Image (tube, rainbow, N blue to C red; front, side):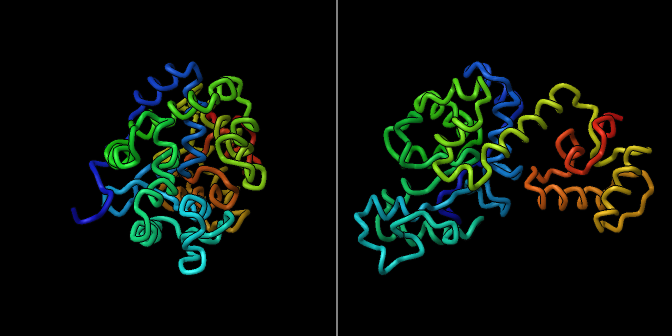
Amino acid sequence: MPYPFSGAATPIGADDVLRVAESLGVEPAVVRAVDTVETGGVGGFLSDGSGRPRILVEAHLFSATTGRRWDASHPGISAPTWNRALYRGGAAEYLRLAEAVDLDREAALKAASWGRFQILGGNHRMVGFDGVEGFVVAMADDEGNHLEAFAEFCRAARLVNALRDRDWETFARRYNGPQYARNRYHLRLAAAYADAVGRDAAPGNLLRLGSAGPAVRRLQATLNLRGAGLLEDGAFGRVTELAVMRFQDAHGLLADGIVGPVTAAALGLPPAHGMA
């Protein structure tokens, strides 16, 4: 294959979310919230056409699994403690993975987190796979597998009640780790959930590409106060969408270019603004 770890890369569907949410007994908006925070709105596969799932290589886990053997000689992929600075992101994570695979393939695959929900390879048994190789193949095949793995992980880790109760702090601590507060993980989950609820309740009451009218003109004027430099013509085109995405990204929101309740509130617009 032209790319290692590539597969069919089948995208997730709305029916997949509804089915898994029902199986867990949680609102679909809860599943969408976790998905939003974990993917940043970019999905579970790289956008380069390689068919490879998004990954992050955890150097501290590779180090622990291999007895610190490679810490001195390969500090970029083997380190005694977690260090965000070691991440390279996107396709570059596969360069880190290749370096680790050359040293210890099984340990490398287990030390990487995979797909939309960033499930660690080391947790493959928790999510229904006998070996990490089979888990990786499934992650490269279908985002529906990412979703099913997430559901199985929540069951095995006893996180379902936290999701049902929307206890974001408990879920964040046990899913994202002890650094969750520093990462604002629980707050991002709460915001993503609120946005998802707004969309589920009134999917037509959003401003997005193609929208037009006074509400869009008010949005453009508000963005211009923040230096966007938009033509206030009341037409939600690509330039307005890009300005919205830049604002969302700068404020830790899902950068999807859609103005829902959370983005409207962050802009200081009244709730009714996004409703017409």
